[in-house]
Length: 202
Image 1 (tube, rainbow, N blue to C red):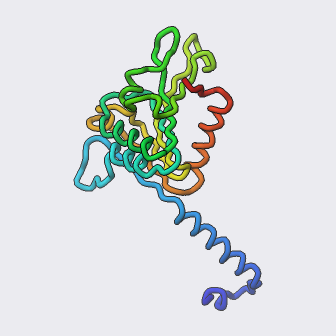
Image 2 (image 1 turned 90 degrees about the horizontal axis):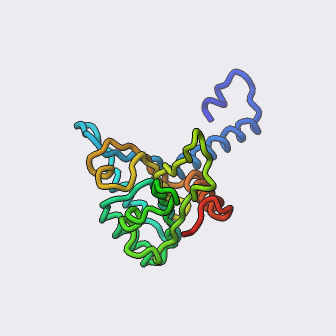
Image 3 (image 1 turned 90 degrees about the vertical axis):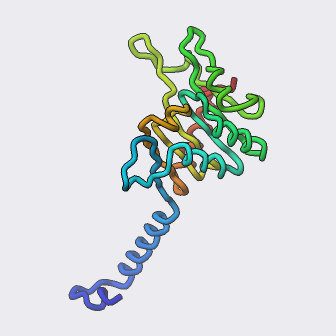
């Protein structure tokens, strides 16, 4: 208000009102979305980033209605397996998208599935069938995404597979997005891929 009154050029009140509304909308958008980093690897005295496994576990534990988990590989991640089971037990609709093996039939990698769930009947398991994947130079595409999305509101995206090494000794970097449009957009995208048969229930 002081700047407006002190301005040498006349500024119409509607223009000031528009500027205030725009600033308010921008601040609302900024505060409703929070982005944090997660890290596994060498640490320095100033590195206070949360570990990859803790960031992922917080997303899984926070799920109330729906949970998507997408990974290329899973191996020896007992804490994550327990939290996935707990989410399913409290009524969360858990959907797992896991990579198939490299065999000629491209079937689900059951070792990865067993690392994440006690019983596949407790969750919905999806695969990206080899026959619908794009190809280049005789090779098909790979399901290489790693993410978890809770309730379309919180999302973890990382370089880390769900493996013991990725959670403990690799150098991995990821982000946790809470609020905003991105988590819901990614959840809707995976849902659309499932509805279109690109990702198929096994």
